[in-house]
Image (cartoon, rainbow, N blue to C red):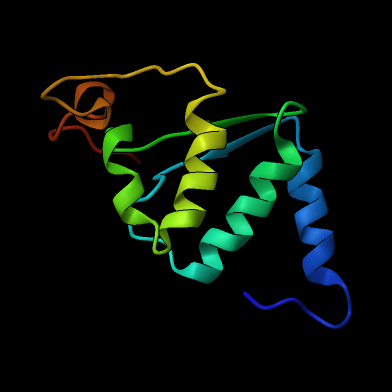
Length: 109
């Protein structure tokens, strides 16, 4: 994602800044590149202490650092997330989709 000459990239970042609740699902399902981490840091900095952000991840917070390419940016991102947050850890052997989804025998239509 490159900054665009027409300003659309900046407008997109401004939209993320103004949303009351930003939910980032599948947080760190794949590792972040330097460019992705830099963009994310800017979004988080713009929202910090002003708006709420929810990070949904399959991974424990202790493993997040290794999934961000540059250590210094990882430190900055995680410092803002981890030290200014409420943690809700759901643990279990059965996924919510499996527990509350349609049973295998049901069909729709």
